[in-house]
Amino acid sequence: MIKLPEEPCQCPDCLRFYREHDRLIREFPTLRQQQEINWAALQSFRTLCGRVLEDLQRQVSQKSSKHSEDKENTGILNKKRESMSQVISDLESINAHLFSVEALMERIFDVKVPDKVDDKFKEIAGELAPDPLNIDRLRLNRLLHQTPDLPEK
Image (tube, rainbow, N blue to C red; front, side, top):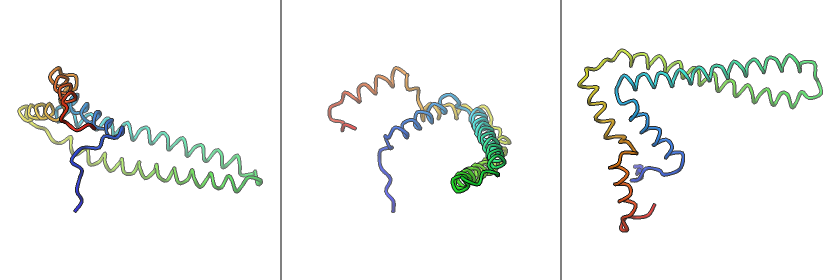
């Protein structure tokens, strides 16, 4: 059995993730807002990935037509071309997955909840990700950091 650590990871990447996670809960505390922000994030990811893919494909086709006559550097060009082909293949795979996620997310928009349930979303959001600048939270953090019997991290 795998034992999970009791404390969440404190590496810079994880801390940044926790802050962003909490910010998204605080700023978009309703079901509808979460649906919309996730949809927008997915669409921006697809748009950017698709444009980069198109640009790389265009560059590869332009370079291959320019270098088709150049016989001297064919070994180097072939390695670069293979490397770029792998990148393009990976981006095509990412795009395919994003289209699948988009199809699944469209079903989420079919869900509508009553105002009472949306209020519950807001309540739970406040518990999950309280405002880090809230005076009570700042005071509590200061007290915890001044307590000598707590282990240092």
